[in-house]
Amino acid sequence: MSKRGSLNLSIEAIVIVVIAFVVLGLGLGFVRSQFGDIQKTSTAVQEQISQQILDDLRTGNKPLSFPASKLVVGTGDESVQAIGVKNTGDAEKSLRIDFLVKGSDKFYTFESAVSTDFLSTEGDSVSAEILWDNEPQNLKPGETRIIPVTIKSPDKIGNYLFKVNLVDIADPSKPIDSRTFFIKTS
Image (tube, rainbow, N blue to C red; front, side, top):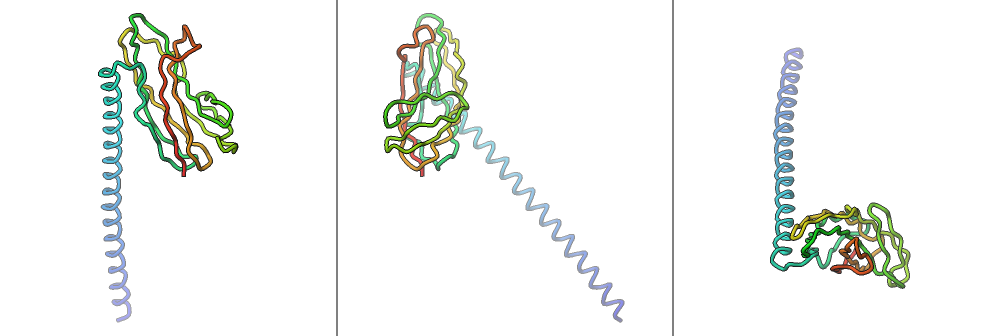
């Protein structure tokens, strides 16, 4: 009798293990499909933002479009944004985008993919980083371009004033256009 009882117990254990694997497989399939849906939604949102920037450049006839006026992120977190540039002139231009941050004593200029240290308006030592294509953009008259930007927020809690400048390479002494935005870290 004990042999039959142990055989019964092992068959029940096998059935439980098989059911567990089936449920696990179904759960993994569900999670995978949800992540696929999230990725599709994220791509659709990025395309809508790019289209909104292009529409803004066309209708406003502005040389520079940066859709955000305020970003709220955690300290040291990354935020992916997009900048639109347009050659509103009658001749081909070579344009460059510059990023700056307001410190306690001056505006500090960023280099792409290089951590920039600056003094905040409170006098604290702060570090931030911005990654973008800082090479000159050759644009024909009326041509627009979307440039993705990854901003690694400052590593201290605070409110920081950033500036985006669009500069003509032929005359870099003054920007063609400029936009400011705030990054609030928490």
